[in-house]
Length: 288
Ligand code: TA6
Image (tube, rainbow, N blue to C red; front, side, top):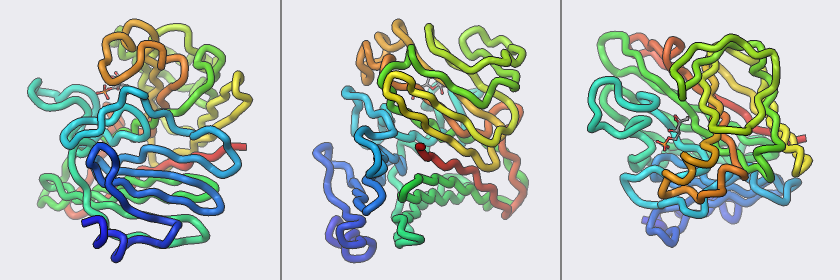
């Protein structure tokens, strides 16, 4: 399988496939602009490091589990076709099915000196294409096509874990003017007018579109810019102390070194896609 992947989709030293220590198939990107990696399992982007950076932009837990059928704690899990718990069936996994499934490799190419890889999955009446573009910036684009004869709704969150030197010295800017749902209290909250800072468990769904979200990691002196496309929901999450201790695949102190900023279409802003229509939700990540 690995030989066939490299024969058909490898791009020399710019993109090569191998068997990860866990047994999962991993694609590794290495160009003049960046290094990155992704698993076919869950179409899971695991790392992205521009050559200008000494530390990966994405966080991966030291306790992460890399197994078929299980979510990976870090990088960019894909939550689809539902976000959070299933609306009616408690036996269904949180955040949907596609982050647990093996995706197929559709294409790979060099575009404008970036490595662009497309993965595909058909699940139910959804045909999915996940496009990962790794260059001086990273662009992630999720396209869902409704193959049924009637309109269908679905939720999507690109659940990105960002690596921080110190979450207690981090500021998230760009969402100040939006109301949000506090997931911990299930309470609708008014816009705060202030950047988000972490000093406790934070789990918020912001409703509305924004041009850009800035993650200012003051301790590291790094700014990360997230530019969403066709996303009218954003999720911001830090588990903080107690929840970190409850997650087996997450170190007790790892809340200090990460936050999630998620480009999404969930809740009242979920996707509603007509028969044989498609919608694409995307985001770009860049640094100074
Ligand atoms: O996006 C935030 C959130 O919904 C939190 O409530 C927390 O559950 C997190 O996702 C992680 O979910 P997971 O199923 O990956 O453990």
